[in-house]
Amino acid sequence: MKPSKTSLMCTILAVALALRLINLTTSLWYDELYTYVNFIRGGPADALLRYRAANNHPLYSFCAWLSLCSTPGSLELSLRLPALLLGLTTIALLMRRGGALLGAPAGLIGAALLSLAPAHALYSQEARGYTGASLFVTLALLSAASQRTRRDELTLTAAIPLAIWFHAASGLVTLSLGLSALGASSPPRRALRRAWLLGHLLALICYLPILKRTMGFARRHVLGSHEQGVLDRLTQMLTALCSWDRLGIVGALLVTLVVLGAVSARRGTPEQRRFSRSALVGAGALALFWSLPGTLFFPRFVLFIQPALLALAGIGGAELARASRRPSLVVAGLLVAAATLQLPTFSRLAATPQQDLRGALRLAERWARGDLVVAGGTGGELLASYASPGVRFVEGHAELDELLSEGGRLIYIEPFAGGSVGLIAERLGAARRARVLAGLRHKVKVYELAAKSGR
Image 1 (tube, rainbow, N blue to C red):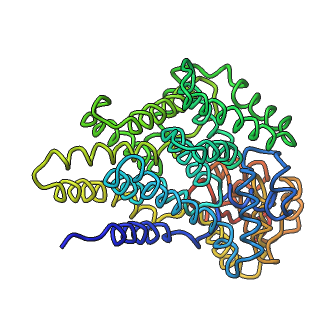
Image 2: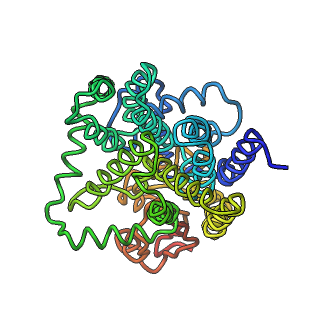
């Protein structure tokens, strides 16, 4: 007896949920904590109108503030719940809307592959706007490919500003949609142009209150690194690609390229062809921006286009299954292979959270044995706000020197310490009395410091 479509959808969502609960309540990491302290904690005005750094994804900060006000439980769960729900909604969107447009088998296979994607699972457990941008970029691509009704036009008009409001870099994909609307005068193309222009106008209006700060940030980070050569940029890009938490994205791209060989643009439906062109042009826009020397662009931004690329993989899988004598076996083999390839990455995710700031604080308080615990350096003030009242924030090394001159011993935490105890100790004038008690990922270290005359 074949399983029903509803039971398959429920199974896919259940697997996706289970994989996205692995680190949902673990310690916040630096970027999440920075976002909470500077943009979420202050309320909706700070969330939507403050842009002192790119760490603020405005619409997500607002959603996290609403969740914080309405969800009982831990701080970590409240801040990350919107990311989880947005990630699961993207999977459901591929199944329902993607299945209606691209074919039910393609929608189900694409959704199943997305549920098994480690990168998507990782950012569904992070209090940032990536899954929100991914959801609305996918919705925009599906609406642009449909071009059937007035509803599709309105959906595209709304999805574009929402995607960009969740994360400005998703505009690279939505802007590339304009290429699909150029050079034709048919009514569907005119409607697409109209929706595209209106959507980006709305996005500009959303960013008007913070446009000056946004442009200043982009100018500094996109145009400010002229000294970085192309070779250096490519080396940096390859290094980032090899990072374990990026392999899910790279794997999705490779799988997509392989299965696209089984899908001929001439054999697909008009909707499939339009969707394929839009998705591939959007991926090309991201890749082009990514490869430019001097850009501050992270591989995680490919997450915006990942659901669409996996939907293309779903089309390819459905074509392969249709061409075989045992289609169910082909689909099952594809999903088992995907799950097997991603299993080591999920194991690593379960074993190592992004950055265990709470663990560092617990270790510091345990090792202090009644002595002072201080937080300083990059992120020290944030860490002190995340800690118990017994942890003190110090402004700089001069204040640390003053504390050490009183004699005794203290435990010092610096979230982004450079890793050289000698350098920090030398600046403190206590080189022989400093040692690392613990090193955590992302350069979080706990130091024991003492004055030369101390015990």
